[in-house]
Image (cartoon, rainbow, N blue to C red; front, side, top):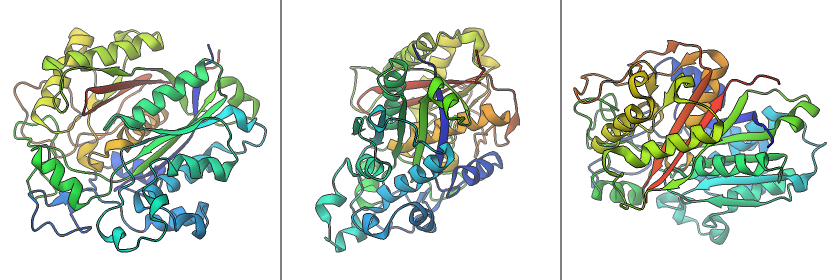
Length: 403
């Protein structure tokens, strides 16, 4: 089996228009959640979100032609900006057979909503779910498999897991992968409010509080993330910078409920166990957990229970943080953007905090890295993504060491 490594990253989030800005603001304890500007919230219970600043469009234009961008939605352009950054980061790929490169993105939808529907120019292309991976393949001449995956909030984590399998098996030398979020819209706000999943707190500083006593739901986040995965052999051959190793990943279905996680987090625990087994790593070796941590009553409780189930007594000393209070719940992009946070933690030895952490929940007693980033040597990090429909995925990233 081929060792799979990370050689490029790119990110667009409410905290920054590139991966470095995103990371620096994340570890500074900042939050991108603010009063919604995309649409009127008069008819909505939720008033705040982690919107991406429109200045990201300049980043997209650095990598993509105006003609190509005219047929895309804002959400897709976030993904394209992250892809351009990641491909620039990974360096020259001219020596790789383009048939041995694939593109896989997690896409819930292209978010052709609200103001964008006033212009129906190129509408067929704008609503085409696979437009993001297709445009990436066209720009870089990639002729391997090109497609998107849709498994709700686990979409880009599933994409990472499948990409890992593609490279480990020898089918491909490189996979460009990641995901995009849904744009804040009337449809998204209405839908999640109907499910009582989002916070109705209008205060950006307290609306999303993972693992706290009075948490009352998640807050939407916008963004796009891209990670370039590659076989160790290919990366070393072209002298690419290797961030870390993608050592393991899981993809499971809970077969339980369309919106609620399996009771007591048993499905979440299974996801973590499967990923660690795939990586050949024991629970004792894990030094950081990037939690799904949505700030909903059931997710935070069950994920805590699942961590205790998998890690036993060590669960009380392993740092666990959720970055959703900083960048919002980025849905289809979440797995990729949260994996990038793990990649940077391994690289820098810093763990991002769970911001907005105020009153602890007596039932939730893990080390949630409250409010301030922490210096901590991260040898192995895991990142959880648990989506509606019972789609669970965990990715395992570890410090790269040449054999």
